Amino acid sequence: MCQDPNTKPSSKSPRGSPTTGKETSPLLSTSSSVSDGDWSGTTPVPRYAKRMFSLESSEFDEPSSVTPPFKFWPTTFGALALSFGMLGFSLWMPFVGLKEAAGETYQFAYWSYDPSISSFDNTAWTYVTDYMLAAIMAAFTMSTLSLSQRRNTDRLCKRVASLSLLYMISVIAGGIAHQTFLTVESRNSLSFQLLWTLCVGTVSLASTSMGCCGSEIVRKFQAERHCSAAFQKIPLIPEYVWCIYGSCVFAFTALGGMSFQRPACDIFIAGTTQTPTTAYIMIVLFFLDHPKAKFNIRALGMFGFIFNAPLLPLYPILIYYTDLSLAAVNTLLHGWLTVAWSLQAFSLGHVIRSVMYTAKENSM
Image (cartoon, rainbow, N blue to C red; front, side):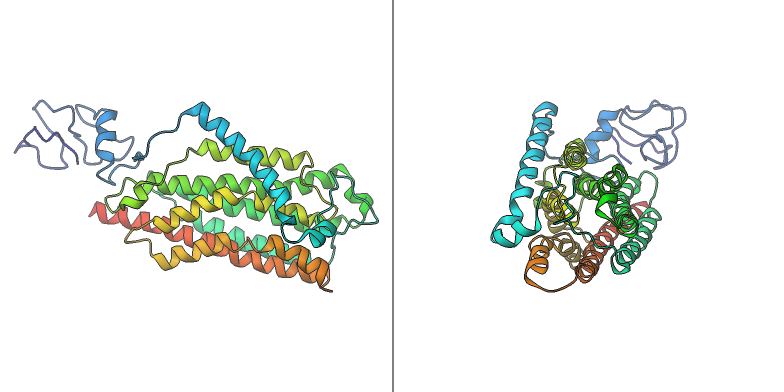
């Protein structure tokens, strides 16, 4: 409960009970609850008063960041510049140090596959492991949503769940494609193009969910009294930045900008575009010095987010320098993704629980 420091509390109005027969200060809440949207009593608390005290207490569920706000148009142009810059970086990165292997592996198709060089695995090893990974992501999605508490963890739960959901949609679409499109001619169809855009595009859009998770954690925890000085300095990047970024990458995917003769290569390019959001959420997890968010679990999350990075150079190495079949390579990669994505969901779920524990302590 927040009140004007110059106003003495009335002996007839105990803490948490409505006042009766007395004129109330405009900064006093007369409700037993100060949750957002629940401002009952004779005199509502002005919005500026709520903002004023939100930096000192986690009692309010709309905390504001202490970092300076971003200006809309400069930030929008910055997001567009970041999008195009990262697309160029992602198409260049595979060839660094692996020019020969990458040159043989990453051959552009632009949705037109050449029977002489195109390769796409259709064995059960690939699509069954896709479906298994989808089941694991579905379980994490449901588990995350079960932690949702209105006006407390619901915003963060939705963002974390959307990340697992996008992963799930990606591997389901990939599994269907590997199981049903058995010839090059079938893969040159519009139906394959739409399905594979869904598979790769959801990986591109995962950047949006990942960035929004980071922004929401910053928004939520910078208002906590336990927040460290280092965490206070992390900028609260507006969520529309991540929406612009993910939309640009998705559009580039749909237009065939990252379409290769080996369609699996599309996934690795899309994954590389996650670099900015991966860096942001890893910084957030590292500096999240909160008594209920244990560092060892946050470290597992940071490992999960960076664990995908070696796949970019590993894929052309496995294809060009080894005799492993595509089925074996895809199975290995799906197992790798299972570890990385599971660690991401597990650590973010732990962060959600820390919010719940803090809210429970504050209510006592």
